[in-house]
Amino acid sequence: MRSQDLWYFIIDGYVEPTTATIEMALSNAGHVLLKDNRKKDNKALGLIQQGLNESIFVKISNATSSQMAWNILETNYQGASKVKTVKLQNLKRDFENLKMKDSESIDAFMTQVMSVVNLLRQYGDDVDNKRVIEKVLRSLPKKFEPVVIPIEEFKDLRQMHIDELTGSLIAYESRMSRYDEGSLEHAFKSQLQFAKGRGRGKSSNHGRGGRFTGQSDSRYEAVSEEKS
Image 1 (cartoon, rainbow, N blue to C red):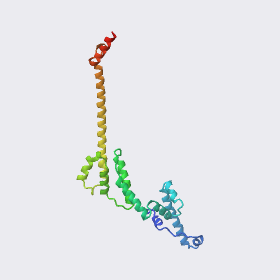
Image 2 (image 1 turned 180 degrees about the vertical axis):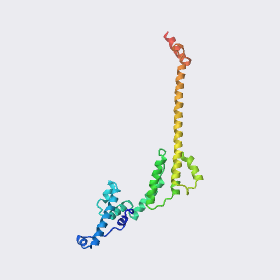
Image 3 (image 1 turned 60 degrees about the horizontal axis):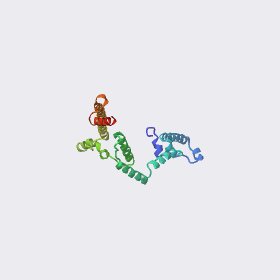
Image 4 (image 1 turned 90 degrees about the horizontal axis):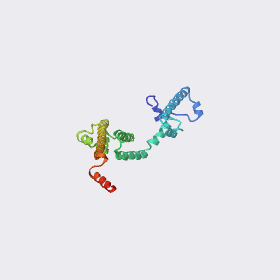
């Protein structure tokens, strides 16, 4: 809006003649100015409308100026001071309740965290990086302790950037994933070798002529004697 010199119309608006008589009484310069103001205001209103999806657009569909549309959106999504306070409290609660699930990836969790953080900042809570990083470190599953403890003990969290923390956690998550895949492959190979060993053991229990040896052989002989 500012780049196209339209922000003024959203904040201050312009004077629109209330009747056709008043408009007709304008001087030539007044008519030129009114036409230019209407053109710019319509452009600003169009830009606002283009930035909304259908479910939100209906809220401003009856707005006749960019200032009117903006005020409707501001009331709905930022609200009066009381509504703003309630939303800020809810966002703070959401922030404190954030906790990464064992099945969740670092990338997905950090996206969730930053979504809440950005909303907090929009509503006036100046959440600094240190506070976000401390919250993330407290919210990780136990499997991340080998990387969390060194960060807490040896890193200056006031100087650490969120992107740096995210990169370290993603790298550790990737290493853990490779180790898990290796362990799974090792377990599968062990199970396969055990199955093959059992197969060889069964075949070695067969004596000559298809008779069994050992305990099984004794049972076979007993049955043969009864039949004879």
